[in-house]
Image 1 (cartoon, rainbow, N blue to C red):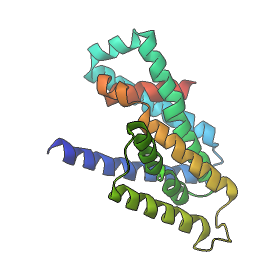
Image 2 (cartoon, rainbow, N blue to C red; image 1 turned 90 degrees about the horizontal axis):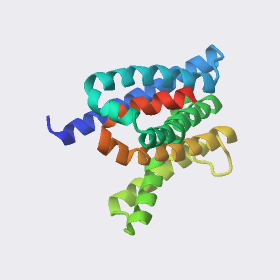
Image 3 (spheres, one colour; image 1 turned 60 degrees about the horizontal axis):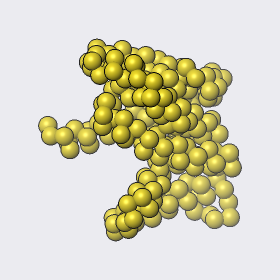
Length: 200
């Protein structure tokens, strides 16, 4: 299996897992009165601990280099808070304010923000396909928010607000760790990011 196919498979599995975690989160918050903050901390701590231990087992030399460097750990902490923690927390608040399906669709408008950011940074114009994707993402968001009636909001203002905010935080989560992942690998960065974000 080549890298491109692997990437697509992992992306598909990740998207399914993220959607499933949203549905489970909705159940816990609605039926078990678990708060979004508590659930965020719990998820990040458990996942962070598991991935950090796995990263240490797989890449012990690189792991020790990272934890011995205050500068690198500072970057990990920044990613953990402003990338991972905010992304997870705003997503769960959006679910709590609406439902898992709506929150997931709203959050997944984040590629629009990424395309705009990259276009401005690289001083390029989005491709035709990117414009088409942006158009349909906006149409989908409009239909979900209004059910096709521009004079009627079909979800709560809080649900719409937190869904849009979660798209921004998801974009941050995607863009922030680029250099760290290229240098240290996704296991170490994700593990330490989750753990540090969960602790704080």
